[in-house]
Picture 1: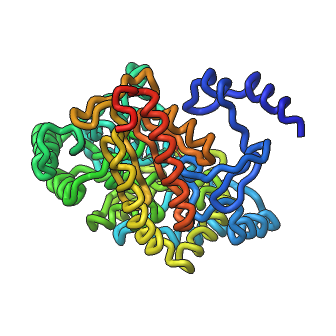
Picture 2: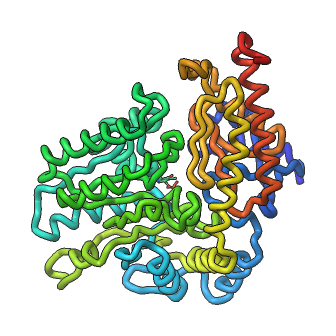
Length: 455
Ligand SMILES: *Cc1c(COP(=O)(O)O)cnc(C)c1O
């Protein structure tokens, strides 16, 4: 293969997502194949998939059972529309999803991406109240640093300035409440941090519940906001507040679902029952673009009736409920069952916690946050004062480029290095990746803070 030609074309004609193309030009990477938890570029260099190909991959690449399920489906049909008609694998997958989701969730509305599953959740919650005859409940509440995808609706319920600010006047306004983040909070007491956020939420609800349709929240861990883990009891208390004030609880499990946090869904950590739950990323094992918005029967019923009642949910895309994707998802969930993968992931998470304790000793590692196999390693200039590196130095980005050189891929969130290995990563591969992260972090942080090098 003419590798130079591929580089040239990629630089001339491609525009990559969430990517400054000048960065790509300086350090291009073109993947050609994958096997297990390794990816191979067009030169034959291998990389451990330290970010599960952006938080998706579960069993590694080219997993036989999933490959075969897709091929078998291809021999029947690749796609037919879900508008007004169902198809076989989408039905079987709905049954399976209802079986593994929290008990109250009985309905599955398919889509193609996490962001779309969130758009759907927003539109459903908004229309739900109108269908029930309430024309006042139209606003949403979200947590500081929340991320729910990149479409205009999804960013309107998100709050990461770097991604959202420029689109300000396009977005609808949501109420924003502080997330109970412990690391830079003046109080070192987790209970105080938690209560502060809950008090703000209660005050907002008391004041405005009549106009609030729904509360949007990432389940247990804020992903793109920097891998921020909720303190114990927080999500449960948030659920109670939503019930108390008749506000729909919309939980985003796009990143945390499918075993990622050591439970099938992260809400299980707190025994929370969302009214609406969004799922995507791990649903097909990282193979194909399927997502879903699951709802309670109560939410579903508000849309059910004679067509003339005008309660229909008008949403759906060309490829909604795609058969190949649903077949992959079914094969994915079979493997979860056959291998007791969630239990295995929880055990691996304990091992990763030990590995990361070594990293925590490094002079520029300020904080390590982890739930299951979802981890963030925050690099700081000064460990004592928690002072960040100047953002324009891009220490996190440089650390991940160094990791690439050493044979592992991941992407940072600012100066937070993300570690989200596929659930199938072996203990040896996890150890290897921790070693690579340690070497890269040491090297890059000593370059950028020479005064503390070698400490
Ligand atoms: C990734 C993510 C999304 C968006 O999913 P896409 O498939 O990228 O559109 C939404 N919510 C959360 C919590 C995510 O991590």
